[in-house]
Length: 491
Image (cartoon, rainbow, N blue to C red; front, side, top):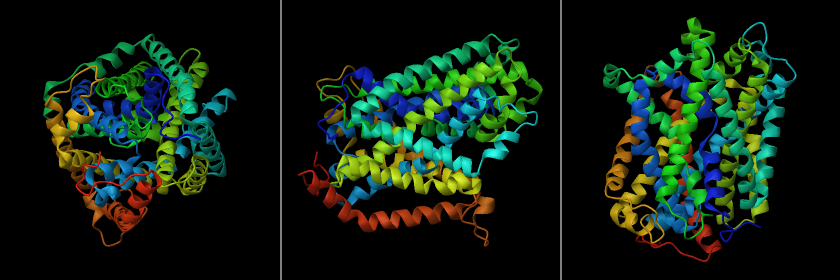
């Protein structure tokens, strides 16, 4: 049985597991698309800025909170803020778990397309023909089941199993992405893609949308503010450094995104430059499952490199899904369940709750929007927790420990304060983008472009969590022999 006494065997193993948590499909399919539609090099400037003003500060916070409390999100918030605020941690845990429900569907798609590459079912003569015949069919349900089974198997092996899987999957993923990037760089005309990606236009930096998209990308592809890093930090060794690991994780994750951008954009500009706007504007699913097969069909040894691409996506999705299942299981273990029972409950819930997204694209897109925006509120809660505790005191106690390799200064205090502002701005901005549809009388709970559906689902979950707060905190603390301080300084 895995418990808090189980730890990662080394920093290398821990960082690989953490990198597996952070690097997912968003790095490979969303980053190139968002970078391409937001100025390329100009986007990179803003993206690098928010790596230091959102991702790294929150990763430092999560590392410190998980290691310092040895609890999942509910217990960590209760011990930091007091028993009245465990619901904030429950929100963090729920949001990541709700994403898990449809993320397994995404992993299933990658598995099916990898197999279709090996069997030469793709590419098809008509772009998107295979995708149209697969998505939302019973076969998408089957691959969802396979994805959940693979991820649950890894988590069931305990922390050591997660570490072993990461030791194989992440180096393999890095090699696959590097091979694809090198191949893309050798294509004729690839220099145009490089120039676009790395040449900023100073005038574009005055466009607020580029900065907001860059902040959003950091919030979605590093895993900062999800509660995932906090959960893995529960298993950090007591002498493990917090700050350095957060920097390594943040920069390592964004390096993978950059390689993916090189891979995709150099290929697009080399193979189908006239259709670049159409391809990158096709959305995540359109870019990956409709246009990628068409791109690889036009390069030498394209079938081989397409297999590598989809295998890389499988590995990226797999390691991220593992971390989501581990987070949900950790919360149930904190409530007193055995690890085996907790994983079984999460596995069954993930399988059943993923069915609607597997069979209905409208539900998938709705859930993706609702809970992706919900992550902004999670980041807000993390920052508020530390600010209420006392940001400078928290930093000196849980970040700058005697085992720290680097000293974190007062810049972090101001960065955490800025995270609160950034989170509020992001939520308002995402709501503003759908305002035209959001307040119509004909409320559609499955519409993506509808503020009402977000507020409706958020209100239900927050009401339940607030009502269950006392039970959640009491069970968490009693099951683990502790009581949170009513003053919120129970660490």
